[in-house]
Length: 160
Image (cartoon, rainbow, N blue to C red; front, side, top):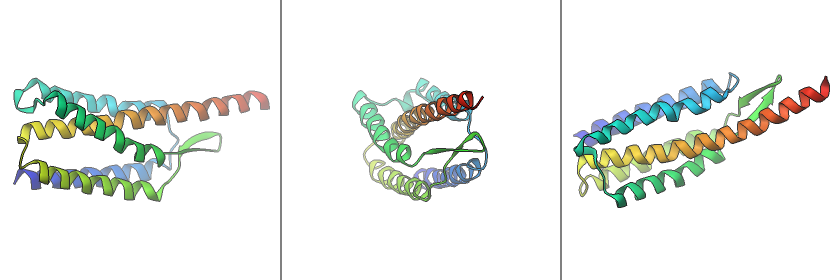
């Protein structure tokens, strides 16, 4: 039952991410908008204060590594562009498909792994996976943003 509930929550969160991503492409990007989500998400690490969520070193490494691998797909579909002298996120049709694909993989993995890994540890592993995915993605986004920002600054200086 908990697997079904957590899967429904994951689907709702994915839909929310897609809506936010689509709407955000209409507004300029700022470093704060890139950096804050992983910081906010990091508060979830407090779950590991409770033994029910503890994972082994191998489970941590597996989850984090898989998160980093998944982040590659997000990095590849997160591009910026300059419009009206400001930096915007480019809309990407692939992003939605990748997000849905990652969600399906997550649900399948959770269904399979829940038969052999304790629910609390599995929850911890999926948080680690998500954190391992968002941190490299946001770092790559920030570096890409900084590069465009510097180009924009130097072109503005040259125009003056």
